[in-house]
Amino acid sequence: MPTLRLVFFGTPDFAVPSLQALVEAGYPVLAVVTQPDKPAGRGRRVVEGAVKLAATSLGIPLLQPDRLRDEAFQQQLVALGADLGVVAAYGKILPAAVLEAPRLGMVNVHASLLPRWRGASPIQRAIMAGDAETGVSIMRVVQALDAGPVLDRVSRSIGPDETAGQVEHDLARLGAALLLRVLGSMERGEVLEVPQDESEVTYAPPLTKEDGRIDWSRPARTIHDQVRALQGWPHAFTTLAGSRIIVLETAVPEPGSEQVEAAALPGTVLSLAGDALAVSTGTGPLHLRRVQAEGRRPITGREFAAGARLRPGARFST
Image (cartoon, rainbow, N blue to C red; front, side):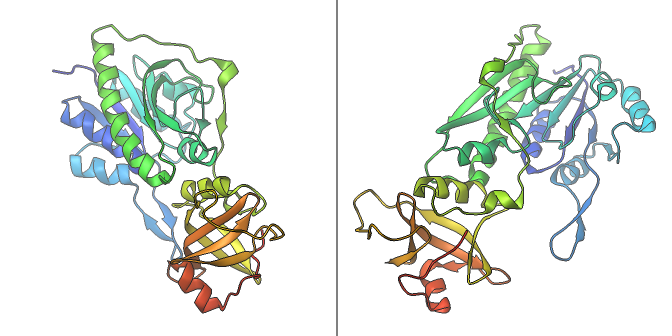
């Protein structure tokens, strides 16, 4: 029977499988710390986070501090008497007083193969960079960003057309299983903490809306990777006659499968390709399979071309 008494820090969907796995394995989760409810969407309706909903359904006490440096919250945390803190996509940097509250410190479930992609958006940055592999690392939490020693990790390939949502869903599952393995090793005194190689560090800064802006002069594969990485948020986008067009799904045709006029400028509409719209890039055509004009429903590239009365030679702009 697990004996480590835990406090869990997490907020979004990614963290839920880890929390559920801990409870199902019999670990005493003394409390869940999650970010305050926030307004979201066009109506700015206050939305409860996925971890909060899961903790409520599991009957676990909940803490939602506005500030982690608040003395009253820190006293609550110390009073829990937890042996270990488990962090999974909490969303804020933890101050020293919080890290030191549990007897054995804290470990973090991070969605990358550290030291690659330290930071807030490791899955999206990996896909945007065209990485063929990613994974989950369990690391010791230290004051520097995702810089603590790694206790264990697991890898998985990234398919050429997989979206960030698909990869995240699988990594959440893999991370939960890996977390249980690490905690078991800790209880047996067998865990090995391996320092990260600082020469191999890359960073994954928070996403912004500008990350979605398509530069048609870039290679078709690079734009395709951008689209699938940002499908959830902030979405890849382009403009047509001053209107913002969200690009939801693309495909890169096989080399030599289409004849493209050499003089076609990047962003130029070339032709229809089944239900998709072929657009020139820096290295050849890219098929727009699904797009969405602002305030409208998602439609196929063919439907968009018909509705916008696009003809070959029309051009999207950056």
